[in-house]
Image (tube, rainbow, N blue to C red):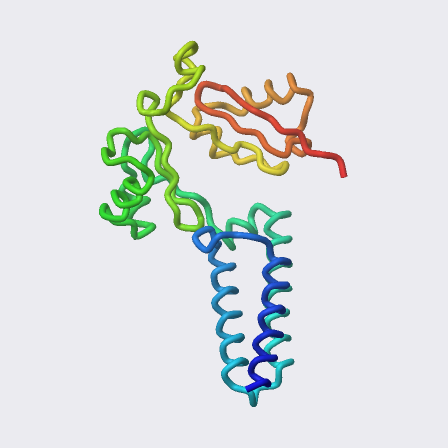
Length: 225
């Protein structure tokens, strides 16, 4: 009995340390790779606690190995946009400018019932109130309502022309340009070149740049190491 007790405590503290190293996320926010790691670690921990014939090191080493693999993979995806797309995928819009993208829904195997359920969870019971709905890489649905269904703000009262039915989109992420966002916002490379020339920046010097179809943009410069 004491053996099981102490094995359980040791495994518990090892998992806590590993989770701290990997970072904090709620269960519903786990990416696919993180979800797989969580399942594997829980299974290894359960087997090692139930079966005292398994050496404790036989559980600790695989758990630390999985933790190390996740940290390395996170580092690679942080540095490479292509690797991030391969590992976590891309967010997918299933409602664009108030129109349901049926092809995207079929590709994601997202049914009408799934869509309506997620809209209700987000507080929307009438699909006509929704401008954009995006399925994030963790499976959650993000909803962007039409201008006249958003909460009142100073901009909406005094500058209604700024109310846009298209949310700001990430054009440059950590120095990498996403050309398809230019097309999504009906903007051109010439417009982007003009903005970068005005700001005296190159894409590699930008940590984050967002834009929308009204050509309104926001830039966060990359911090120097």
